[in-house]
Length: 278
Image 1 (cartoon, rainbow, N blue to C red):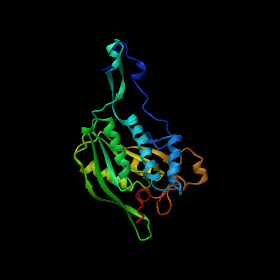
Image 2: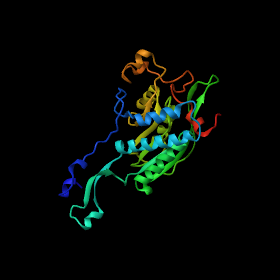
Image 3: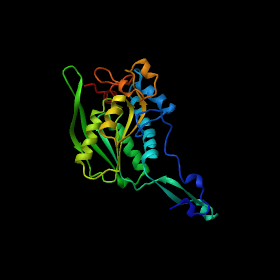
Image 4: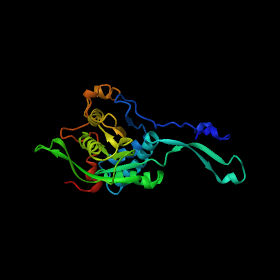
């Protein structure tokens, strides 16, 4: 239905902007790093060494409520809807017409345990409030880093899973706070593409912090995947590289320590969110 099919429709709501404010970069059009002072303020508090539970999980919840909103606005399909308001009883103009989200869109939130458990639950709940709940699902998978004797990451391991059906036509979200090396997410994405029945409408990684290494891994191995993040961390780069627009000297950028933890980062989120350090 077009907004023009109703004579009193306000054309300004017919085609809305799709994007939040974003950081300028050269990583490619599928990468969306939000330029949001509000979210950055709270993420800085979350990453501070003095921040403890229960504040940690409360901030993570808030961050993902805003992030999933950005993903819904930027990636999910829309329709023009006509809504009869309470004023229709007294005025022929008591109908609103405008572009809204398509609530009949399938969606899957994938919980990558353990850092992704809380973020996925937040996204799942938010999707249930926005879309038709019958079309929303949460899956659960276990991914783990594989390290050598020196503590260096050598790969990723896909463990047990509880996947509740196919992904045909679905928006499949991977809410994982820390995009460090990209190994676990790349493996999880590969599993869904190769092993889970159906062809997804779109795959979206939803992160709090990402590194240049993570972005390179995901965009090269899965060029069809969209990435949303609150912050880019490339603190292991040289001062000269840090003065350049992100992605211009991508090969020289780094956001990882020798043992592949994010810097400046915020520590291992799987550990701090669960108070479990082994």
